[in-house]
Structure formats: C-alpha cells, structure tokens
Image (cartoon, rainbow, N blue to C red):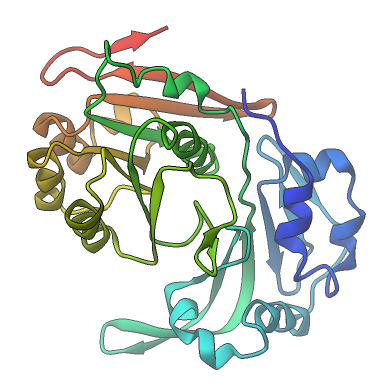
Length: 302
C-alpha cells in the first residue's frame, strides 16, 4: 500500500494559494491524500483525495482562473502558447496543470486554448519503497524482458514508475523518456525527483524519438516511459538490440488490457513479459504483479 506526504500538496499549489487562500487552510489529512485539485470558474474548488472529494466553501471567479493561468506561465502567456495548445503545463516538482477552455484551430490542429475556464492540478508524489514489490521480479532467475504498469487514471502508475526507476537505477542502466517532465522533473539539468543514480533522462522528447536516441547514444539495459504510445517498429528496435522496455498504460483491469489492440501486439511480440495491475481505494493503492507468457494463460505471482 502506498502512503502520501502533505508537503507535495503545498509544493504543487504554491503558485495558486495567493489567489485561492482556502487551499492552504485544509487539514493535514486532506493534504496528505490529495491527488488532484480542480479549479473551475463560477464553481467551488474540489480536492480529489482518491476515494472521496473535498469541496471548499468558495466560488472561483473567472478573473481568479485567469490569474492562476498567468502565474503558471510566469506572467508571459505568449511564451507558453505551445504548452497551452497541448492543454497542460508541467510545474516545478513534476506537478501538472491541465486546462479546458475555447480551442483555436489552424486547419485541423489546435494552436491555442483561450478563455480557460477549468484548471486541474495533478500532484506528483514520491513514495520511496512503493515499487519494492515490483523491483523484486528483476532478478537473474526471473528475467524481465518488458514490464507494463496498468491502472485507471490516478491509480498511482507514474508514482510507482518513478520509484521503480529509483530502485532499478542502482542496478541497471536506465534511459528515462520523460516526455512531459513529470517523472524526474529536471531543472537546469538536475532531476528534482529521485529516479536512480544510473538513469539517463531524455526530457521533452517524444517517445519514438527518445527511445531511438536512447538506444543509439546511451546503451541502456531498459528504456522507461510513461503512457503507452511508442510505434511498434520502435519497440521492435528495442527487442532487436536486447533492450528491455518499461511503460505504463490506462486500463481498468487485466481483462480490459487484453482488449487493447496495442497492448495485445506488445505481448504477442514478446516485448512485454510482465504486468503490474494497480487498483485504488480510499486507503491507498494496491498492486498485483502478473506474468504474461506469450500465447499462454496469465499467471499471478504472489
């Protein structure tokens, strides 16, 4: 079971508490369990705590939402147009602010989101030891060609992935493709979150380009990336070079995982030999480690 820390809440909301002071006044229990904070114009602020939501007794104005966005952009929204077009900004410490509003298109591509009406701040947490059970499968007797961490949104996938990097980065050469700067939160070339002493970080690279560069330049034992999305041909390059792959994917459970066409191709190709299924309740996140023999039945490792 994965625990929590309240100081990460304060770090994630440091930028906005001056506009919404009620956020600073919640209990330590709420701070410790908070996963997301949703700020919506004309409505109360909601703190999602895993198994329940805590609603503040406030009403956020459109001006407050605008002030929060400006603060995220360091008072230069124009400089962050690319990030705003993607719908999110990665904050210091690996936290992420996502946005919804009015889309501005150029052809079939969104070039800007303006009149932002909702902000969702996802709190990045480091929980040392939460991936210990998963790290145990990486032994000489139980060779792991590839690992897929599955679970619903907010089930702890990125948190577990980060701690797994910390652990495996002491035993293997890892190449971390940190596309959104959420896992290592690199600032001035230095990771702000512990992802292992032997981990090379590719910040801001798209998955395909990052994986290929990592294989060519850093000779890793494993390539690590959050959220399934790499092209199957790139994954095959990993296999052909003897490089293992560690990824996450959004899935409700194991049965849904096998209905996902991309995941099915991965398992059939032999790129993924193990899976870790995460589930969440109000008491924390729970993990089941699964072995996925190609073409065979699923075996649960106790």
